[in-house]
Amino acid sequence: MLTELYGRIPNLVRRAVDGLDVDQLTTAPASGTNTIAWLVWHLTRVQDHHVSGLLGADQLWVTGDWAASFGRAPDPDDTGYGHTAEEAAAVRPDSAQALVDYHDAVAARTRAFLDGISAGDLNDVVDERWDPPVTLGVRLVSIADDDLQHAGQAAYVRGLLFARS
Image (cartoon, rainbow, N blue to C red; front, top):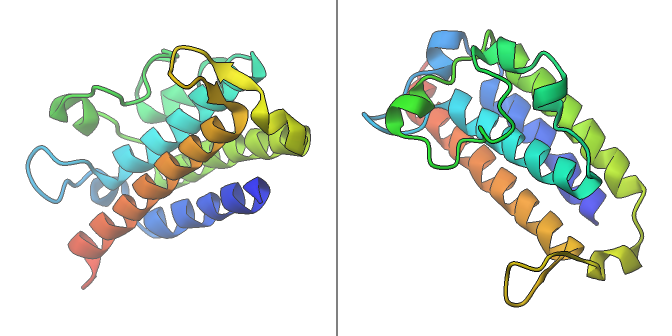
């Protein structure tokens, strides 16, 4: 079920950015709001950050050349949480393809992780800082929920700005 859930996200990413140029990707629907580029970048950064934590591995953002494609430093803590409007506006990919390629790399890593877990693993506690502690299953649902919401927001922004183009 989780493989099916996560398998839906890449197509949503593609549809949100398909055919858009960098200026369109980085156009905010109103002052201080998030762009398509930021929304897709952020949902991918969150998945990369959180799944890497579950793997006990470095993020692809840090180990690859992804940050350069977005004009950013490979800071593992730069996921978009707490970004000001100015910081969000500064997320500028080289192209729509840069967003898709980074997301595809993260999605492939997530699929491989999901293929390696069992139903029993979903009850393992992965974060005791919460009450109740967070299990692997809850964390994976949380990541997918965040990604799906942001993909929907990106699609909405696209429709709002470019429905007639």
